[in-house]
Image 1 (cartoon, rainbow, N blue to C red):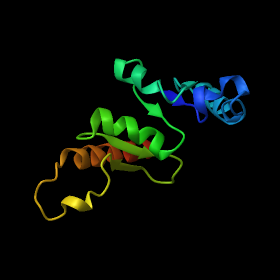
Image 2: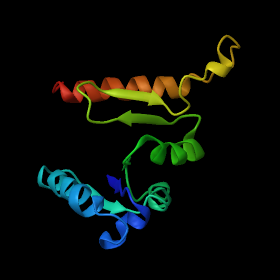
Image 3: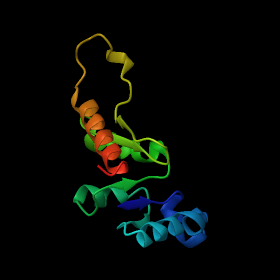
Length: 129
C-alpha cells in the first residue's frame, strides 16, 4: 500500500511542511508494526505513476480530491473510492452520483457494482467471515 504525502514533494524533509514527519510517517510505521506492507509517504504528484506501473496494490491519499484526480484519469468507468476511518465500510463510484444522467438510461453499472462488491468484501473481512 502506497501512502501519499500531504505537502508538495512529500514535505521535502520538513522544508515544505511537517505533516509527513509528524503524522504520516508514524502512521506508516504503525501499519508496518501491525504487519501491513505500507510504504511512503510519496509525493502525490508521482505516486500514481508507480501505482499504474504495478508497484502497489492500493494508494492511500490524504484527502478526497488528491486521489480522485488519478482515479478519474485512470479508471473513471470502473473506479472505486474507499473512505477510511469510518465505523462501517464505505465504497463509492469514482464518478459520484451522476445526477446529470439520471433517467436517461445511459449509466454504466460497473462502477456501482465494483463499489458494492468491495464494500461487501470489506464488511466480511471486518466481521471475520
